[in-house]
Image (cartoon, rainbow, N blue to C red):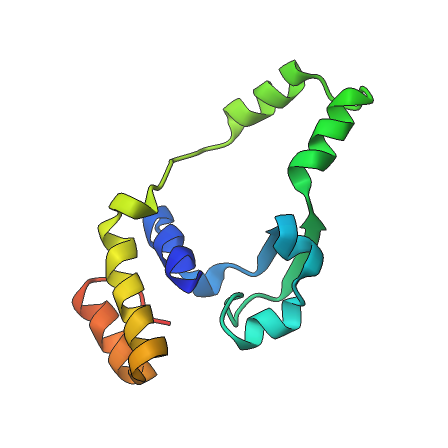
Length: 126
């Protein structure tokens, strides 16, 4: 998951440490303890506020059904949002970070060495 966070931050041109709010959706937003997930690296340590919002797709579908929003309103909102699809399967950044994650978690690579390797790949350090 941390490889995904670093990849998205790098692609967006922001530092991961500048992200202060995180939203946990789906099963993670329902069942995962946010504080425990921070301890194991699922949430970056710089995050100050975590919103656990559960199944957002189901909630939005319900809002549409009860008339809170129309599909046209939602499409207008979607059109305003800047988006870029990042395919992790073909992302060089993701591959580079994922390999470092494997070395860290499976081979005991030190965090200093981890950050050195990221620097060699021109990827922000943790």
